Length: 421
Image (cartoon, rainbow, N blue to C red; front, side):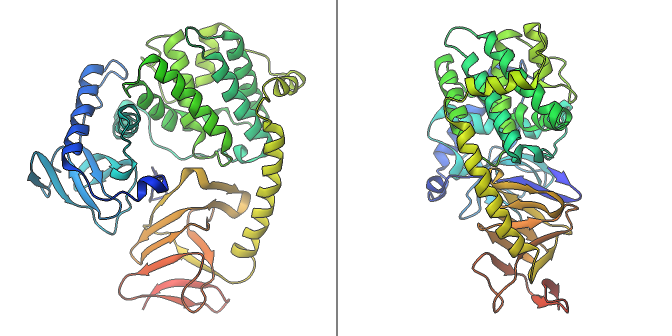
């Protein structure tokens, strides 16, 4: 995604997978062939165009690259049927669509590729859709859904997911649960004036995840099981700003496939999952507050109300700590001009006028590289990333590797910055 000349990549790899090293070239060839066969079998039936294209596997530890084709600059070396090379230290590595050496790639971190074929192909097809989305008429975008960080926003979204999950039965779709899901959805969107903001991001990440699930190669029983597991896992999360569309997209996409086959034909960036589903079942529930409050109790089998209330207390305490770290007292302020960042989408916390907190954040700029797993604040206008002030040039909260000629300097106001000297 590109926002204000800042390239943003979503990055998340499980710690266990991250420990694996080295690209197995034979497996890489197998995975490329699987992806090609999936695209050939789909034959453009999902989106009217093939998702087949250049794929880049990158080892996040060594930066080794293997690809299924060469780049437009012919900079990769053909070896054993693969195109091999190294990814620059100055660029972030992530599961994403990326423009590199004149070619638009589907980039996938090698360590993120599962041994399970369906899970592996889900990831590859998800990112392949991102590589094609612009041409399909769905521009990439960020999420501006700060209301999903609030207690009521989180609760209503999770209740919507629960109702959608209950609607998915082994041999049919229970439309009574669908009506309840839409009630949670429409009430939340009306309360926070969020229908457009949510749908815009769902037409970005939601469609990508739907595509990944649909083209993963999982059979019907596996698909239903995977969706149920996805909801169970999503209910445990709290930072939903950048991740909610994955779950919503997979659920709505599966249900719409069952109720309205071919629903993607003619789909545009202005469409909305909720309105599409309401039309397919022939109803638009009236989202009355009293009924929604009663429905919450009906779907609260996981004690979500209690858990989310407890988390809200934790969140407020965390933000109080952030105020001490990033607002009051001395801090390190790094200009974001021509800076690329990668982050964990499950650790993004909107913070009103202060900006957005990223619990796990990597920044790459002409000055060098920054990494933190203890939080960094990006200002609302994307001009700066704010960190804890250094102690003797370093910090327990972050790690910075500076390029030649760059230094951390103290300003007259007591803050610090990075400058070229």
